[in-house]
Image 1 (spheres, rainbow, N blue to C red):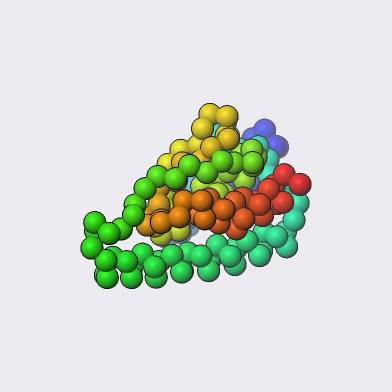
Image 2 (image 1 turned 120 degrees about the vertical axis):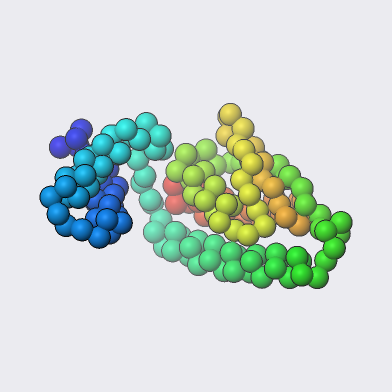
Length: 163
């Protein structure tokens, strides 16, 4: 069964989303949902990182609150800067962050956090996963920004995925 449905939760989600998108329970829609629920996880299995083993759910919950707070604060800060500063006074730049984390699932979560937080965008990760390139909308102190990312995101992610 695991060979046919490598990711049951993904298959279930795809099945439900297809039904919701089509707003129908007729036989053709159910068949299409079933085919997608089986085919998509099989075709994308190689794209997913290794199986997730979350070791510290309490840390994960705390991290979700930190990320939510940071996203809201960043949205406010970006809006304030756009409304009050001239473009020439916004210190937009790429920042390189040395990484201690190597787990592909942790890096995937870090990528999501960086992409969802207003004012930051994931640039690239080096082939050996030792350095992360982030574009930051406004940063004056690069060292402080690097320390913030490592303390607030990388360290908890390492506890969750690598401990």
